[in-house]
Length: 460
Image (cartoon, rainbow, N blue to C red):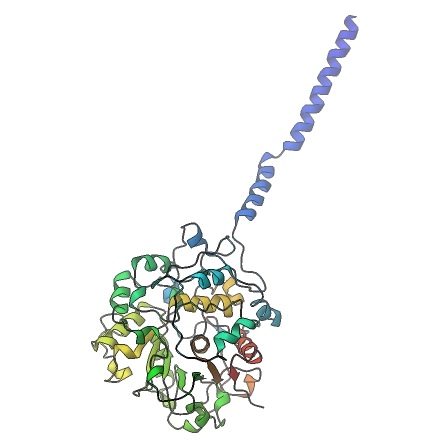
């Protein structure tokens, strides 16, 4: 019996040892096991990165949960250059990248259409953490009275096009005095450059926008009712500076539109036959204006066009834009910054007034970047400085403002046949830079043309 008891005890001990060894093997090393769990949890909780097809998302983490990502302190400095970090091999978006960009409906759009609040309206808050905070696909919405009785305008046709799900009818194109609130500044200061107020302190913002206090400042076509024409549709010519216009003889056609938009180094004298002579809206940033005067002075560009019908539309990417805007509206020297002490009438003429000045809303420029020009650059090292080109902002602003849009001097698939600018004295190859995606813009212009939303000038 004693022997049996000893055998039973020995078997029990062996069994316990086997069970213990199996347990240790399953748990060892515990740090790796826990690491796998933590990795899985991190992936599950992390906001999705930008999709490969660059399809815009519908949320803004900073507005969903009250958190925000502080702006990159170097971002404002990086945007100071007109063209930054030249690309020898610019990004080439695939065709399906552009097509997919217009494939899904946004919650932000639904919220925008429901908004009937008086100015300034609160931004929409689409649900769901699907984007990194710097994207910010959530925008202010406003109610805008229609300026025309055009039944066949872009706003009616775009809803049925491939761009319909991207288009927000009630997003403000321009900012003005009613937008300068502490609440809005708190919301937008997390976005640097043209996409927010990250480089602009609240006092500077308020002082500048306070002078933009009339309907002329928030309406792009502010003189439509006083124009002596019987048209029910506003027709706008948007003129880029591409070499395709050299020898085009489109000047008379361009001047025949109700409104003529131009940008940056728009040399007119001596090229009227090809590009026309009128300018109703001139789009620029302070930086691009100063760089254009330095770079294209030899071609005849000495400053913005000046005429009684010309309006000046600032594309702000730094506080220097707000400072120059205020100086121009008040006919006083620029208070500080790179243009300190300069007389704004030197650029805009002695008859410039606050009613002739406009400024793009940062929500609008961020919306153009996110929904119309969502480039793969946003996934790389230059995401903080990437923005739509000045010409692209101008053309897409016209798309959101005018009933009919004709585009001249913009990039087309045969761009290599033409010099960079129509006023170049010799052929200059088109240059590509890190802060714009010109190839993507070119594809978007083709899609807008094919959809019948714009008429794009192309050589046959």
